[in-house]
Length: 240
Image (cartoon, rainbow, N blue to C red; front, side, top):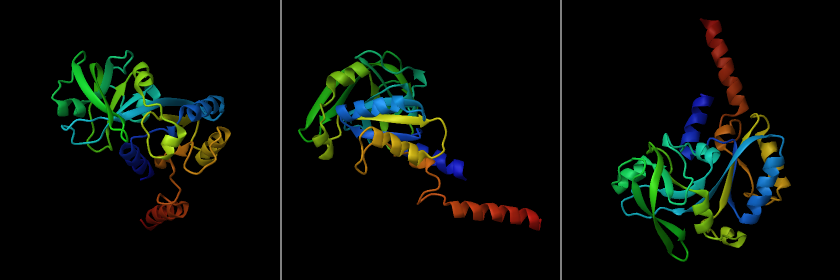
């Protein structure tokens, strides 16, 4: 039951990493990455940049244009099953659902023209044509469909978001991290330790635990409930 619940939440929230950090400015990202790399508890990590929402009237679902390294793409469960992640500025990897909505054949080398929102407050948009270098089967059950661009493209075209802009709800250009620990023990303490070491002391900032692994917290399986279920199973065997 616990493993089934975890798998469902990982799929629902599109995050398989143990902990993550979002909505980071350039300065905050540098501090956090340095802390993550120095942590003895971290096994591996991934990084990414959120560019903006994909804008197309044919989309009947949420689409996000992002850069992600292999670990970050894995944490979103959106690694290409055909082809690879983008390496050049004119390359793109994306969900088959996005391609189908745009009437583009899922095929390596095909061209696709995408428009994305650079800044929602200023109504700034950018349109570019890319070559497909990878794709995967989209899942209708997840929160949104991903479009991966290269690191060079993201760095060149991202909105130069500041901490003030982030606090005002503008997340375009924000950096993010996914972290896997060496084990699942004391996730809360490990995560809090990294956040504080990186200078994030305000609630809701820095690293946060993936709810899928927070099995014994409120709104999840309580420890007392687990004991009761275990005793119930033992009682059933005794009565047989």
